[in-house]
Amino acid sequence: QKEVEQDPGPLSVPEGAIVSLNCTYSNSAFQYFMWYRQYSRKGPELLMYTYSSGNKEDGRFTAQVDKSSKYISLFIRDSQPSDSATYLCAMEDNYGQNFVFGPGTRLSVLP
Amino acid sequence: GAVVSQHPSWVICKSGTSVKIECRSLDFQATTMFWYRQFPKQSLMLMATSNEGSKATYEQGVEKDKFLINHASLTLSTLTVTSAHPEDSSFYICSARDPPREAQYFGPGTRLTVT
Image (cartoon, rainbow over all chains, first blue to last red):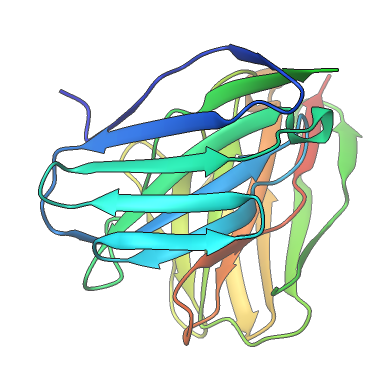
């Protein structure tokens, strides 16, 4: 079992749809959870950064962390074609070590 | 957010030559910088972690004599690919940690093509 798993996609949705991206993990020591967006041939861009369980909202993006289920989600409301990219979850333990990326989900938002 | 730059963005070199890639944190001091490589349609693979003023820690399977990392200041880390071969062609991405926020901020990446 991989340490972090993520639906590979590709995921195609129409413009304006609500997108749900998910990751599961196995290491209960993870405390910090991140979502990055990566456009083709670019470096990843930090979208959301959360600590422990709970929700965090930033504009059209909402991150949820459920540590009891070892499950994190990123929701994108009113999706736009410019949201088309690969989304990577990432997580880290409490000691600033063991930073792990998920394999990424490719998202296409169709106009 | 914190900004990380990389230079060059794209480099082509001949087999057997060495290439240096620079990574700079522009608006914060980064005590720790990371180097990743990424093959097409794959996720990022951590190559090494460097702390300012100390030797880099390389991931298993990464040749430290081939991929030389120097983190000489709190805003600059360099990766030198020595005696490059076509199989070293890849997308190299650096990141820097801004300690108070503990997130990694990534540079735009450098595409290396070895002919």
